[in-house]
Length: 256
Image (tube, rainbow, N blue to C red; front, side, top):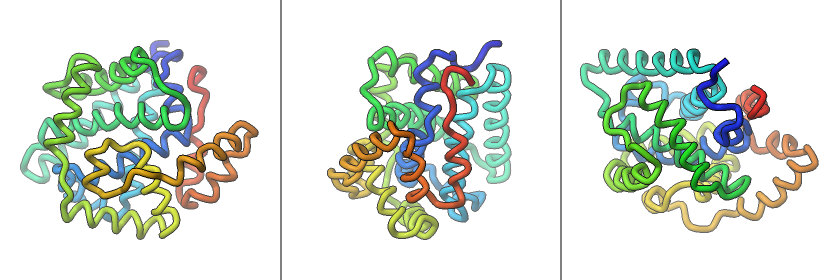
């Protein structure tokens, strides 16, 4: 059976751990809020009504594709394209190509950044592997103007960060919703996690600061994970609504 992502791929290792996905989610929640095309996510009303659920479903959908058989993964990606086409039809305009690329670029960046915060530095070859997986994702979606390799992605990513981000009324509203849905303490943890993985441009626009208290906490967390007690800490910091979903994200990367 042919899989969308090879069983030996580091991408499966990255997306096979719930804690890594939580950091991917944290970074994406920051960058989504700043994207100039975020008004598209407000059009259906789903994002402001349940921002955590909407972002979590996006990340979970990507994760499921990573572990799917190739044909099933391609069908899932085609479904995403179809859903977006319906939204475009209802609004009477097209989502710009750069907005699609931005989401793809986020998945590449936060896959790498989150794994490096929690596990180890990735080699250049492994980073290229991450890029290649999501490049194929974009090709299946028929996205135009994709970079051809990891080095080109780095340059295009930097340009996108400088051109497509701004702090807007949507940014302010989304962060109010994050705080409302998470509560004060968990909201603070979200901000601390964002500091560790977001690019400097994102950090500067949001005014997150340079020091995260989570950096010291991660030493303790890794110890708890080593003795198989990491779920105890997760149960404290995760909203009850998402505990079951997060637990289900831990899979064997090479045997799924």
